[in-house]
Image (cartoon, rainbow over all chains, first blue to last red; front, side, top):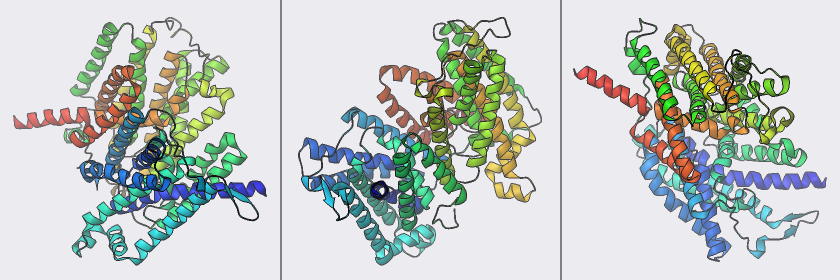
Length: 288
Length: 334
């Protein structure tokens, strides 16, 4: 029973971190049809900035998160303007190559600037230790990650379903040309969602730094996981991404706990099985 | 901006001659380069042999990506399958004849091609890409765990190929391995040239352009792509076996995601949809890598990234494709 509970908590925390990072990727992929392999690199940049701010400058954790989110968006804007703009609507191979190129560059630069060692984001005392839930104590940080994931999911749901911007966003996802013809400024919708996606990636990178340690190869190591989440969940679908994250987080964590030697093995087998059964993702709609 | 390939250029030429003058010139260039390489770098034949092995992998990737339009980031699985098969029969079963090892490599590559093709071709677009990545990780993990067979992360050692056709020992300088590699490359190139010009090759190109139309014309895109995947696996298996025979060790890196991604980079650098493009890309990339990564492996990654971005932005047809388009324009102008 104890094992089952600790697996469940860890899986939930891991799944939520995955969700925070990959939901931005899912939305931009559904919206702009860009296979963005560099998304993990933005999460990594967020982790590095937070680590620098909190550990080397000694700033507060909350402040470090804000700095990481806005810093990463600032770094991403010129990249979007100069590079991503040119691959909207291009064939997948082109997009894959361009974004892998960006990822390699960011890894190389991160390694040059910060060195190959692991970077930690020191937690504030409030998030250290554990919380007693009555029947079981769990690490506060895990709880924090889960709450962050829930908050992001709720906020996104509200923004997309209830606000005027959400209406424009959904219209652009469904049919960009028609939305533009009806007066939606699609470039602004694109730019805002790209910025939000990158910001969420950075946020997830910082919050999840305990689970996914920040190091130069972060971008390459977890790239696959993020892509898997999006493709299993179906691009552009929030419930799909949430479901996929919980499912994959559960499979991965369970595998690691029960069969540490074959953990990865089951994860990838599950991925292949899910995609073969649902080629368009769990919540994918029947369109390319 | 689209990733046009040199297919269009080739398709415009009359396809009457299965093996035209251009191909003879191409073969001549390969052989000339091989001879020049032999005399220019007599102490570095191992690198040249490795370039040939990788070139076979890139050629095989070109078959599915360039000619069939299947985007895959897991093609090293086929290469690694060939390498491990050739290595395992030698290290564990004492089959040390290089030709037999090569045959096992080809068969294993083709089987891996069958498996990968069966999985990857089930989806399109992003899911396809993710499937290919999941597959390469699965293969990698499998080889890592089956360490009694593959040596795990230590690599498979104890491969001792006997003399080639009983006459030529594999020497310390790698001369035999190099000549063996050049002969294999020329043979494979010749066969592939026939395949891509055949009606079957044309069918694959047509599937890349418009699969729905091909289906309505009565052909099965899936069957053709599967066939191409198996051929591609056999070619990658040749490369893997050559690598195992020449270096006498097989490491996990031959089944890695990085290897797959790099082979895709090489292909695009040279130009997709053209066998010469695949060769050009491999040679340029490998020499570049040898020079730069000797200086600093991490700057190397930044350079590859920058190179990729530059190719996508400024030469989407790749080096060979851009040059071929330039020559074609000059010809038209005359």
